[in-house]
Length: 287
Image (tube, rainbow, N blue to C red; front, side, top):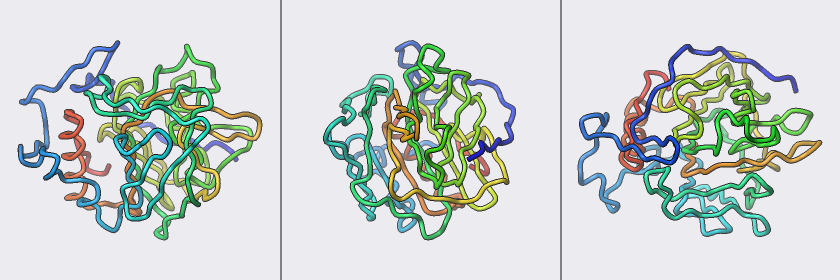
């Protein structure tokens, strides 16, 4: 399948409160935190979650504290659990690089997760997907080119002679969740990829959008929705010529079956993320 290019939205690399550089945690000052939530909402028993935000639109919610070392349990009602008994990733109970939240850590060598059952295609034929993750190196020049993306083959494109990378050694990301073709997603400018960040994908007929921390990185109107039900992976790219493995950490993945969540849902979700991860990531008018 031929790689499909997208349009880059110009921007500048930003310093992100709550981010990490060279192992140092920088927390956002209270005055810098946007979309703040009340202290009551921060209490675990009263926390707004993707379940309460998206309701029936939520089709998958993976959070690192629900990974038991073998199975990553989906918290949505669909039960899209992921498992691997032979070479599973590792649970980091408190990751300083993620403001001491747990992560599922992939070492880049044969560690991955696969669906415990067939990965059902959304009936809506459109998705919005968020991932909170960080790679070990960006742009990855110190890594071999065989390092893969955090999620692979979540669209109908798979195999062939090209693969998913996040990023490739030139800094460019190549992924296409929910699409029939792999997308060239540029070298992100909003955040370094080896810092904890919120990645977002929108896929539907006529649109594929890629955003980081609420800021659009690239978009294209050349897109067809597609889904792979038999061999999607977290941490592995099952290429026809070789396997590519992700090297980095994932703290959370959320997916809904609409490309157009309401403004209230988007605000509630970023509030949830900012409160949980002690960040100040902003919403965007379209993403």
